[in-house]
Image (cartoon, rainbow, N blue to C red; front, side, top):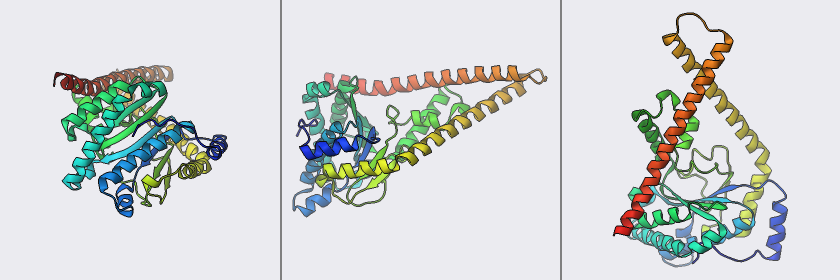
Length: 335
């Protein structure tokens, strides 16, 4: 089954899509695709077939999102917690993932045509080497595409992601790239696996479960959360429309909360910069108080230096992550 499905919406779907698009539309939708195993039991089929049906539904859902002008989708494909399942099921999921990413590489012309960029978020070191290598090829093959984005969370949990971001900042301090005083909430956001994406506007979980299961906890603090009872392989265009309608009904309050949070972050950063400048002047000044203009000049100078340090650190972090994928591809070629 192809990752990119061609085909138009039917007449009723087109009319409904146009009505929805008259209102505010989410630009980034995240899915917890839950219910594959329950679907398999319901249909008296094997678990692996249930997971296969789940992938097919993802391809169909991406087509709906394309027609609804939703340019970015993030999916919870495999949690670190899923490694606790039976060996047969885990091995089956690893093999299915390898097959699907290999199929993706076969469709590179179609992906280029639609401008699809694939990103894989998680600790890929936990995966079999051959799967790591095919994922790296898929990521590097599509990284210059910029019309729409699919983020696949694989070997992922949010707490692990946040912990890793803290490690990255600690590495930056150890390397002398940033100071401990540069550590902040916005910087942590830039160190997450999802740093290239805006936070989701809408998060949808299927199967009737009403918990996030350690998925995008940091990123969805100001997102619309919709929990639907349908099992993922049975998900329909109308289920997606229902979730988008819930987003539209709550759009104003969500946007207001985001704006207030952004203003609060800016205020906290300004206070932190002022405190650092005051401390510096206390230890390195001549004991005479500075006038308001010179204090403002010192603040602007400190802020510019901090922003330059942070930018250099983020460039180093990007280089480290890019090198990981490039090295995997090089190893695959040599093998």
